[in-house]
Length: 258
Image (tube, rainbow, N blue to C red; front, side, top):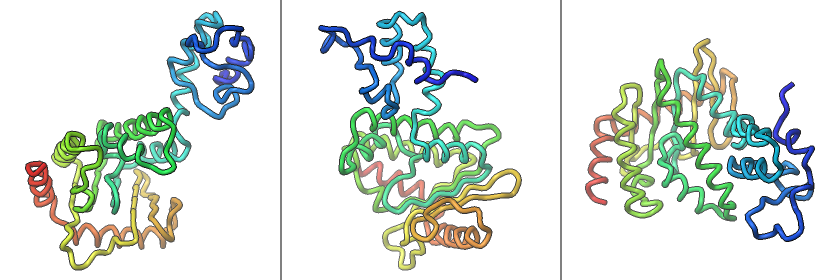
């Protein structure tokens, strides 16, 4: 069985903290430190530096091939795995832009605003995870993707004017893709079936599906009766939103106003 990162570090455990090394750019290592104890996943530069200091002959640096596969939170890895298999994806988010549509700077601003705040390394790790999920746009054959965004969210300049302009431009770019349907739910809509919150639906080549939503179905469900409810709600929300053409025109108008 292939050795994992912790197994590779074990032979040198506790040997790197020599007297006088503090503050000299030497990575903290040993059983009491978060990376070796498994509480923090190392960055690539950490592994390279550790390899040089410990004279490991490239063995530790090579662990990056394994580490990068698990450096994202498990729930993000699970979601990315499902998205990579799906032939149809439908997403409605009421209070933010879907992570599949976010630019790196916008994602960084959204995650960085969380309270209590995340550590800088964790913010970057979460941003990288969101960007990795966006490989779904490069798949061939391309899956059918649909998104419903709230007008109120599109009017909130998260990250500042320039970050927000780039985010709106990104939405226009994605909205023009042949396999993407992007819609906006207007604020003057008198009937809104999405007030309960987020809805996500993923359908797979074998005819199966998985869905989740805020509230009763917060955990992924494959139960047919639950999926029927989610599909009904999502279909109704799409019918209440602006058409794809109207939605892109609306985003262009917002971009002109920023």
